[in-house]
Image 1 (cartoon, rainbow, N blue to C red):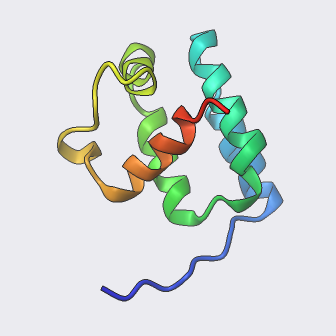
Image 2 (tube, rainbow, N blue to C red):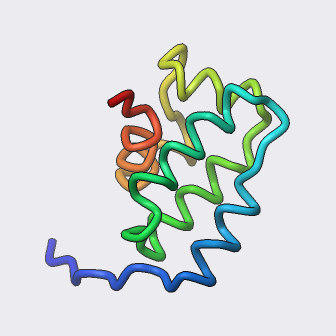
Length: 92
């Protein structure tokens, strides 16, 4: 399968995505803030869609994924969601 390289989002789109990704649980916010600090400038539109999908989860379900208590299943089980989730899970 041939994939074309996506252009990263612009600063405004990243700022909006970051703002919409704020969560009720501090633990989730720590993962999310670290992700945006490290990868924010390179987020592509398909990654933004995956982030939005993950952010639509309940806080505890998202935390379970971030802490590897569970793995994506069903509609969440896509390559892009898994890639973004691994970036979110990075510790160092």
